[in-house]
Image 1: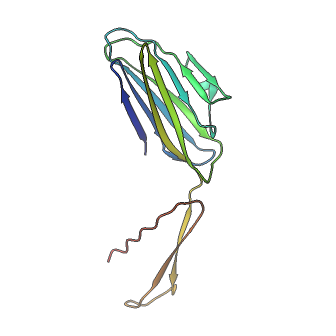
Image 2: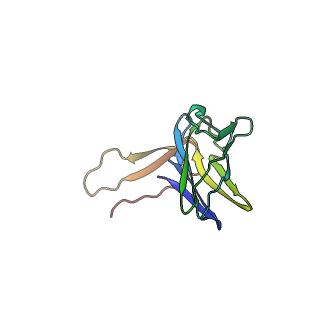
Image 3: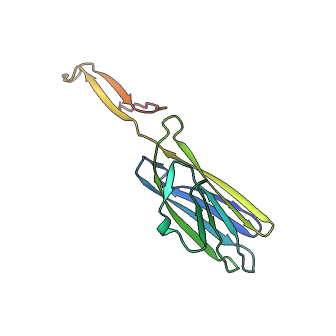
Length: 168
């Protein structure tokens, strides 16, 4: 599933999305930043994307007019946009390098400045190790009509909630 956030000023809309919203170390997600110019004239907005230190990107896939600062995880993009509803999109692959088991939720931030207008949007996603679940039956075999006990075992990082639906 994808997560998306939208912000709008008088002259711009900023849409920030990530897909998928949950990844493990070594897996890739795609971050998209979409700008829409609501003003009648052209704009040259300054876009800054702040990536968490737990992800990296493929520098060879960055578009022109983009500068990446690896020390602080910021990406600066300065596109030129036509007026009257024109849209531009920056698509950025991010690869999870490490998982912080204690705080798997990470944040990507995007801010856009065009003249006096400035908007900022944060988007949370998850980098972690998924828990494993198993169900044990006691007794392992039972005759029709006899009681059985089900036990759920979960290992790995939490928090974890259990929901049982037995259909009866």
